[in-house]
Length: 287
Image 1 (cartoon, rainbow, N blue to C red):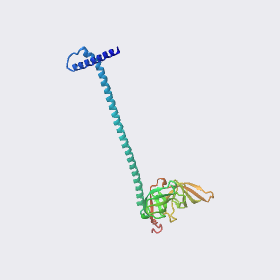
Image 2 (cartoon, rainbow, N blue to C red; image 1 turned 180 degrees about the vertical axis):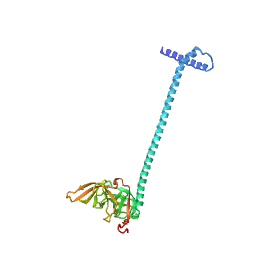
Image 3 (cartoon, rainbow, N blue to C red; image 1 turned 120 degrees about the horizontal axis):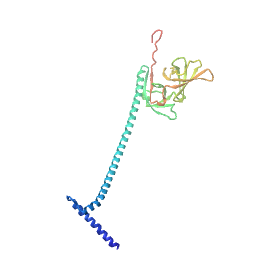
């Protein structure tokens, strides 16, 4: 029974397919009217055909969308790489500009003091993290005429002096080191001689042995006194920010803010020779 029905169904489907093919071949010819069977085939076939076309259309649009997304993603990645490269280039240009300004400052100072100092420019090449305010290493040495004990300065003020030297490098002891001491005088009054010592800090020096009757005040500028052989006279040390009375009541001390920014020190100048400026005699006019 079921086999008979199956055979009938098969032949029925086959008949419909053949009829559809015949009709499609006939309708491909130019005619004004179509038969009833052709209409039936159209009614059955057209929705199927539209569905297939619709599906292929949607899949095509989806494929285009995926392609556009990949193109956009590639473009974004390309722009991000260019942006990163430009950022690095911009940073390099800013660094070159900052370095050029520093070197111009060094060169200008060297020219302005040509009659007083013979200077050897140097770059800071090493500092110890454990002794940041104690010593640093510069890239000039004996082959450049640098010797132990020579003062080291910056256009802003005194840095320290050479404590050891090799052929192509030298170690500099900083005035911020606790073991360093510099003879100083107040630039304004010239009346007070004292000693500035390091505190191990970048933003604080201490001036000691100030007579209690001194007129020292905040904002007084402190310079080297020139009373020792270590440093020429008149090099800027820093500014008084606080005056303290010692417990014995006979002496004062003062906190001094260094003129040099020791946290951002990159280039220095070694004084290899010094010619004190000639002072004119006010009475005779002679030098």
